[in-house]
Image (cartoon, rainbow, N blue to C red; front, top):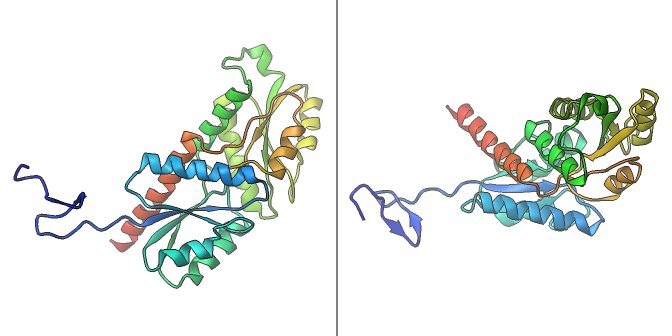
Length: 262
């Protein structure tokens, strides 16, 4: 050991004066929850990928509803340990604005809540990758592009901010693919996926893919995929860009806290 290397105790770095470095705040993935068992499997796979990317970071899971562990139970188990909640949600809406902040406030201590995952270019990257897996051509000439389009199938919300965020992601994906990308919804907003498909067909867009804008499989994702006239991509799931985005939102939240403290 050189003079410039801090001594180690029990495998953890300590300062030259003997003080241990503080543990980073825990990252709590906040999933919606689903009756589809594939959803929980997918979220756990994403959590495992996040842990692989940041092994020293404590990563936990909490659901808003339907699945255990529920978020209040996860926060209670953390006790007084600091935490950053990262919603596995793709835009603003009731859960982001009401449910999650209320659950965080009920924990009776300082907890940071990061923004939802979307919109962000990393989501467009993951969506593109899922489309390629489903059979989207790696290269498309001008003739093919004139008859090709994508419906970005999302859950839907009555909150207009949610539609704004989905439309932003649609523009990011459209710029990446070079074809129109139309947002459509499974519930609570319009157009529906079938309506969007009919509108595109009326414009001569007959080769239309459905891009699944869901974090995990479930009833809405399945319903939207079944409407696809051509190919339908899988939900975003545990794609590496998703794991990177989770950590980006976590780091972003901590940077904001540091800036506020300064």
